[in-house]
Length: 240
Length: 240
DNA sequence: CGGGGCATTGAGTTGAGTCAACAACCGTGG
DNA sequence: CCACGGTTGTTGACTCAACTCAATGCCCCG
Image 1 (cartoon, rainbow over the protein chains, first blue to last red):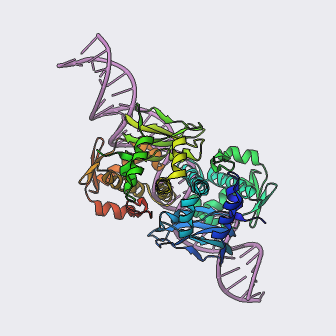
Image 2 (image 1 turned 30 degrees about the horizontal axis):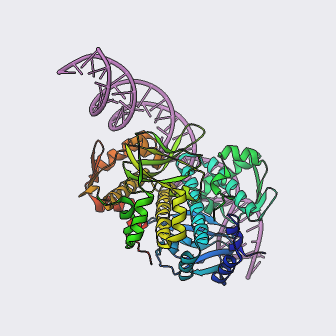
Image 3 (image 1 turned 90 degrees about the vertical axis):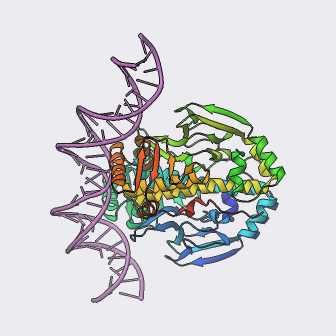
C-alpha cells in the first residue's frame, strides 16, 4: 500500500520526489488508538495534527444536557485535525470508532512545510476546504431535508468516499457505525434512524446486514438524496 | 478607516510593511453589488475571490423543491469566497443582502502570495478555518438544539462578530435580515422564527425594532444558547 | 449460557410545520 | 402629501414528522 498522505495529496496534483520525502518524514510517527478512545479531546491544545491511517473516527461535541453531536465521520486517509495546526484549541473532540492507526504530524513540521513548500501548503489547505464543504453539505441536510433524504445522502457520501480510497467493492462497503451514531450525526434519534433505514430497505434502495451496506439502486438513492458528489472535490487539481 | 483585509489579518499577528503593501495591491479592485444580486453563483468557476468591504451577504444553496438553505451570513471584513481559490467550482452561491462593496482578489495574485508570503498564506488559511468552525457550530445547533436555542445562539454570534469589527454599540447592532432569511439559515419556517423571537422578547432576553437588535441580557442569552465565543477564534495568534 | 450492546417494535406526545388571513411598514408615482 | 402595492411581520387553527418512553428480541463474545 502506498503512503496514505502521499496518496491523498497526489489526487490533486503530482508531487515531486522531494515533496514526497518530506511527507514521509513528517508522518513517520504512528500510534494506535483503541475503539472509543479520544484521539484529540475537546478544549485541549494540540501540538501535532493527526492523520488517520487505519480505522474510523468521528468528530464530536457534547452539549450540556448530555446530548452529543457528531459533525464528521473520518475514514482512512483523512487528516482528522489538520485544523488544529492553526486553531490550536480544539473546538470539538475526535474519537476512534474502531481500532485506529494514526500518524502524528508535529505542528512544528507543518510550519516548516508552509515556509518551504508552497504547493504542499496549498494541498493541505485544500484538504481542510473539502472537509468544510462536507460540513456545509451536512448543514444543508439538517436544515432542509427529511430524515430519509439525510440518511440517503449520508450513505451516498460514504459510498463515494470509500470508493475513492479503494474500500468499496461494487456498491457495497463496510460502515462500522451504530444506529445511535448515525442519529447523532444526522440529528435524529436511534428509533427514527431505525425506522427510516427500514423504509429505505423496504423500498429496495439499500440492503444492509450488520456493518455492511449494499446500495441496491445507486441511481435512485442519489435522486432521493439530491446527491451530487461535486462537493467532495475528489478530482480538484491544484496549480503548481 | 483602515484597510479591511489588513485589519482582518492583523488580528492574528502583526504584518510587515511589505505584506501590507501586497495586501493593498491585490485588493485594489472594488465593485458594487445591489441587494439581492449574486456576488458569485452556485456551480460557476471563479477566477477571483471576493472580500466584503461594506454590506451584508449570504452563502446559500437551492434545493430541487424550491427550498433554500443559508449556510453563512457574511459581514464586512469577511472573505466571502476565499474557498473558491482552491475549490474553483462554487458548491454554493453568495448573494448580497444589502448594497455591498466588494474587493476582487485575483486567484493569480493569491497564487503568487502563496509562493512568496508563507505568513500571509497561513493567515488566509486561518480565515477559512474560522469560517469552517462557524459552520460546524451551526451544524451542531441544527442537529441538537431547539429553535429557541439556535436563534439565541445566532444572535450571540452576530453580536460577537459585529463587535469585533466595531459595528456593535453596547449590546445593540444592526441585523439587516428578514425573519424568512433567519429561518432559511437556522432551518425553521418564518412562522416559527416569528413566534420564537417573540418568546425571547417576552422573556426579556432581547429587544428588537425593525433591523436593530438589542440584547437585553447577554449573560442569560448566552446561557440559553450554550454560546462560547471560542470557536470564532477572534484572538488566535499565528507564529511567524 | 449469560450479559451487554444493538436493533426493533408499539403507543402516545410534541415541537415545529402548513395554510390562510390580516396587519404594519415602506418606497414610489401621481 | 396621499393612495397603492409589495414586502415583511403577526396570529390562529390544524397537522405531522420526529421524539419519548418502554419493552422485547437478537447476536456476539467471553
